Image 1 (cartoon, rainbow, N blue to C red):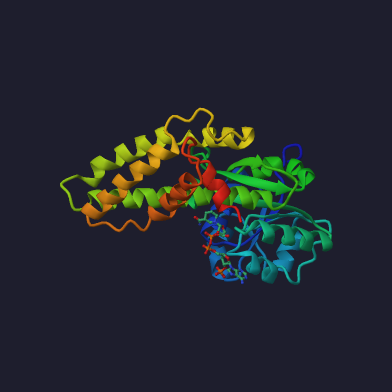
Image 2 (cartoon, helix red, strand yellow):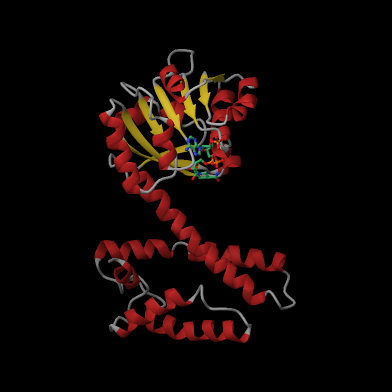
Length: 291
Ligand code: FVH
């Protein structure tokens, strides 16, 4: 933003997320050029004040700041094959792996652009709604991030996690992976009560409160990894928890529920216990996972 004018930017990709981003920037007063492979998706945004480019190359040429939010890394390469990136500030909000983000950063830099990768920790309704808590991890060029910070902060909060362009994707995927484990646990818990006279609507708040109470377990794990002492502050040790797992597995059997979501983790706990670490918590499982 300079004086009273809002920074001009270009957005490639008008899927569910791209459209939400576009609407947030337009609502804030940013002049916005958009492009989408299927042109009809740009029509509602044209009505809301966006300039629609006919090609991705034309859209890139329109602004110094170019944001990309496409399906995957391959679509980023395909969409910008003919674009001149010289002196552009390219922000890629397309979900990718850390390795893909690092290669994409080299690709952009070879073409004369500064590069910032982003991992969006939000779903489309959370964009442009600061109260939702949505945010984006950014990594790569710190100079680019600082130069465009106010524009980048319009759709969602910002969290810069380092110069390594792979770090935003790594943080994003690590949190999504933890979420996947939580979804697995929630699915198993509902399966256990499914055939009983327990209303899912009454059970849900119990689950939420319990998971919320247990979430700070992550701080203890971090402390173990930082200190190297996996027994530090352990309240419920591995020997006890592994024994407890037999009750979890037996209950699944009694309830006619497959234990296939539980067994991968319980098997790792058993291996760590068998290696003689019964006085630890579950932090040692991390060492078993790393190849
Ligand atoms: N939607 C969500 O909940 C998640 C939240 C977290 C972040 N993700 C990531 O955001 C990227 C975009 O997601 P999206 O929700 O906008 O995805 P779609 O609605 O499926 O739109 C995909 C857009 O990509 C275009 N596209 C696909 N392939 C190509 C290609 N080869 N060349 C050019 N463009 C391509 C597609 O165009 P079209 O089908 O309309 O022509 C859409 O614009 C994504 O990385 C999520 O993981 C969203």
